[in-house]
Amino acid sequence: MSNSYVSIVRQAIDLLDGVSLGEYQHKLPPHFPSSIGSHMRHIIDHFLALMNGHTNGIVDYNVRHRHNNVEQFPAAAVESFESISHWLSNVNDKDLDLPLKVSTEVDVSRTHTTTCQSTLERELVFASSHAIHHFALVRIICSMQNIIVPEFFGYAPATISHINKTA
Image 1 (cartoon, rainbow, N blue to C red):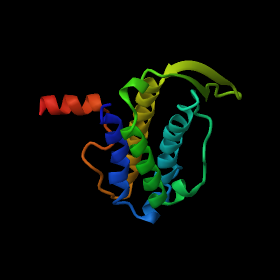
Image 2: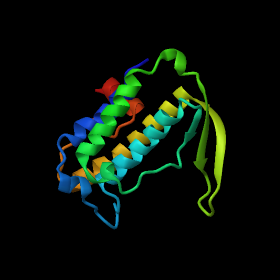
Image 3: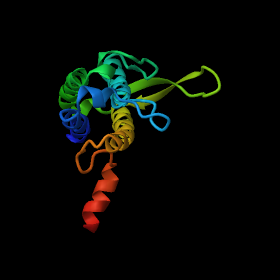
Image 4: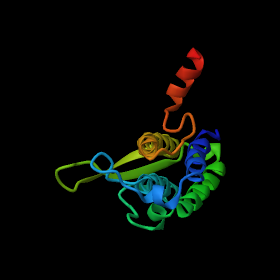
């Protein structure tokens, strides 16, 4: 399997190595009522839902672990990202087409969960794209705290390819 999914997860680990506990927990309302930790926990929740659900064929993105150690402590997040990275490194190419049932809430006005068909690879694409989206928000939060981030942290792969072609 391509290392691209692992590389995306490793971006979080690389960033968190340079973030203090205070920076990780700091909230910047009204624009960012969630901390770096909140975003990292949210990303981890999605990868864990996929990691834990792919074995039985049912992925439930509604399972969240709000206010846990991963959200509060960067070392706990790094440990979770390391576990996810290890799992991704061991996914076989033949497993990418495994069928999955995916459940998630889809309505903002009431509680309504839908379930649809997908594959492991499609959900890896989703979880990775979702992570990059949150990395972009974390990049802004870091900027507001004067935290230096890696050059392409929070950039989509297609954007990086475009930048590299025009450089």
